Length: 173
Image (cartoon, rainbow, N blue to C red):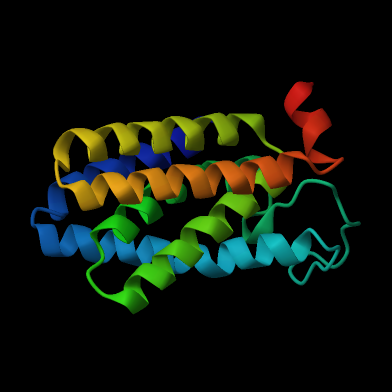
């Protein structure tokens, strides 16, 4: 809808005008990722038929999390996945790496449970762009090792979830 696009443009212009230093950008990204943890966790819980925010709705195959619509949830989560991978890669301490890895994996699982192919494609394009940038800009051997680790982990998660009987038909339809 038009009002959603206009809202996105307003947020973009506000962020581009007011987030001028690296510290404020990092705080914003980490805030977005911290908010994604309960959103993703609720989507996973919702996939088991437990709906806390919409108890009058019957259980659906597609989860909508706290956003009310599977398309909106997939759009949000498809933006979160590459950000979580980037913060994971740049985090210096062990606790930070664990937190951002959990955020990334939980977001991927929740994204798959939305059954939204557009969100899947968007997240895939974002992850590919992130990996390409990481390989080009991060010439260190350690960064390449992490990129390979992330690709293998995401491939295993996707393969495991796509082998479920409910997800595979959706990807092929």
